[in-house]
Length: 73
Image (cartoon, rainbow, N blue to C red; front, side, top):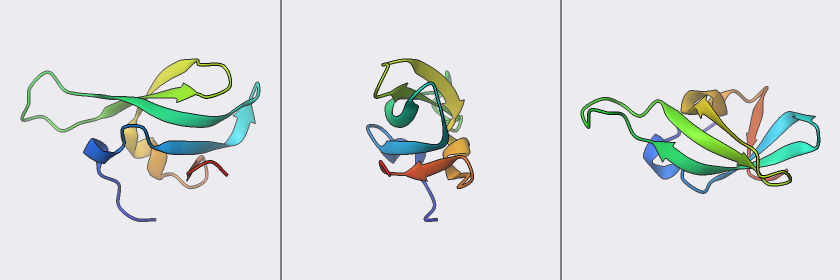
């Protein structure tokens, strides 16, 4: 997988490999900026397309191909 840049994740589409309660397709709705501008970005908010439920996850979790696939598959 290509290396991800957290600053370019906003509005990117992701598929959760093992859907829970019909929540399979997600969109990165927000990149959470750290309190200090010199600190690295650690978290993003993903929104389920089906239910509009949101959750905050470490952006590096999206690199785990066993859990997430880039795009809507």
